[in-house]
Amino acid sequence: MLGPRFEKRMWLAMMIVFAGVVLVAPMIGCFAFSPLLVAGGIQPYPLAAALGCMLAEAITVIALVFLVLRSKK
Image 1: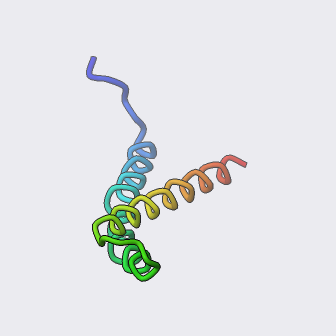
Image 2: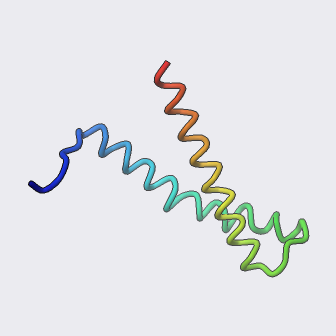
């Protein structure tokens, strides 16, 4: 057996999560949040970029959890 078979909607949900957390959130973190963190006094820039990526990914995961919990009601 090759493993569990997922429904098409589950594959779509996994691709949305993958795109949100792995592709979109780091770009937002690097290009939007890290300059704000540097302006706020966090140095050096690579640290600010890493913190910006982590912040954007955390916000994305929280938003996805909120959407899932809200859709179950």
